[in-house]
Amino acid sequence: MRSAYPLLFERSVPGRRGADLPQLDVPELSGLVPQSLLHEAPLPLPELAEVDVVRHYTNLSRRNFGVDNGFYPLGSCTMKYNPKINEEVAPLFNGVHPLADADCAAGAIRLMDALEKALCEVAGFDKFTLQPAAGAHGELTGLMLIKAYHDMREDYARNVIIVPDAAHGTNPASAVMAGFKTREIKSAPDGGIDLDALRAAVGPDVAGLMLTNPSTLGLFEANIEEVAKIVHEAGGLLYYDGANLNAIMGVVRPGDMGFDVMHINLHKTFSTPHGGGGPGAGPVGVKKELIPFLPYPVVMEGEDGMPMLDYDRPLSIGKVRGFYGSFSVLAKAYAYILSLGARGLREASENAVLNANYVMHALRDAYAIPHDRICMHECVIAPTEEMLANGVHTTDIAKTLIDFGYHPPTIYFPLIVHEAMMIEPTESESRETLDAFIAAMKEIARMARENPEALHQTPTTTPIGRPDEVQAARKPVLRWKAEE
Image 1 (cartoon, rainbow, N blue to C red):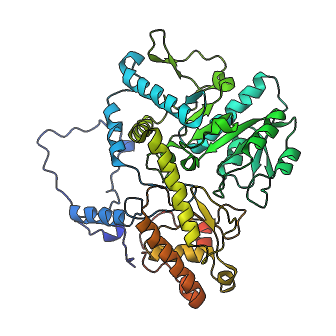
Image 2: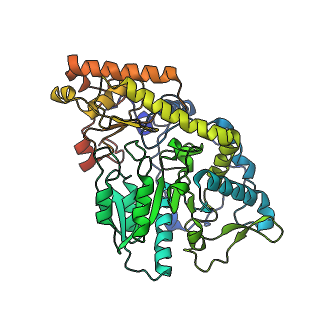
Image 3: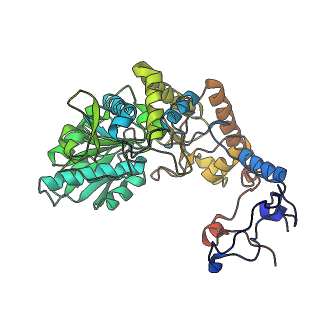
């Protein structure tokens, strides 16, 4: 049975070809490939005309959703529009081979040096490594630096990382991968760190605290200086998860808050498209005490005043990435910083915060607001008690948004908010776009009151509606099989 959107195998017609090759005009040679490696029977490939293949993949591409064709308010992931001009700079370095001598890659090294200095200025740190390939990779690298710091001091008992319950899911995973145990602390009623819980959690076994500020609740930690004091007085270090830097960039610096280590998601904050596994970059910044442990090579100033690569790092944790990191991503980030400048970076953050608060305020009467206070770059809302009583859940709202032409926000995260929806409009979107999205959310709220059953059938405009998610997880269909 052919589906409504048949695969290339299902479209196949015996004997159909995209092109016919001419007869050989040179002698055919045999015996070059061992007989055991030859495939005598024809390969079971689909037989199609060129136009069929082109149309198939073109139609598939039209089913993709991205920031270039619609609003993508995926909270915590910062799916903002990335100016195309920044994409033009990466190919300029395509001719530089990663194994080239430093003298032949002076331009690339100077770019790395300039980007690192810019990140130090934005984040308030003394030195950065550009090697890590993504945010979680940056987390792992930062935690390895923390471990190396304590080990050098022979403080081997420090094997615990404190992780708030509002943390990104990668935080505890990265801590465990780095060889630490984790200790969770609960949030206070206002969504911030419970200082009493933190005081009870610190001790001689604590290596550090991983914290996102603003948190995954979209809230700025007002007591951050006290948090830093508590951890430092206990002998631990503070790790800053830079995933939400989009909210404070150019306004306040993590290094000034008391953090010792941080990573920055260049692919979220500094203009590189991301999603689907890449591309990404997660540079890690440190205070001066941790510089000796950075991965090598480190970009340093040479005797001639020019930047050079320093491999002589006896206390280094080693390399964490092949060569020097995701260089094309680094180039795009540097172009973004140069394009905006200090004032532009601050304005981007201010607009991101303004847009999130605009959405939250507009939806206040239609949805529940778990923490009713000024948010940062993202806001967390939830279905009202009336919606839940009518059988309408976050999944229903998200699926219905697809029919309105919007990518759903992040749902059921953060985990500490029941039926959470995390909306991050970013600084990219206009008021008109936000007003249209708000209108769609309000219409869904009306439907939830007046016709809740209709929300259980959505989406209705997509090739696939609602699959059986339990069966899809337990019995996934991973490949096509010909009918027998």
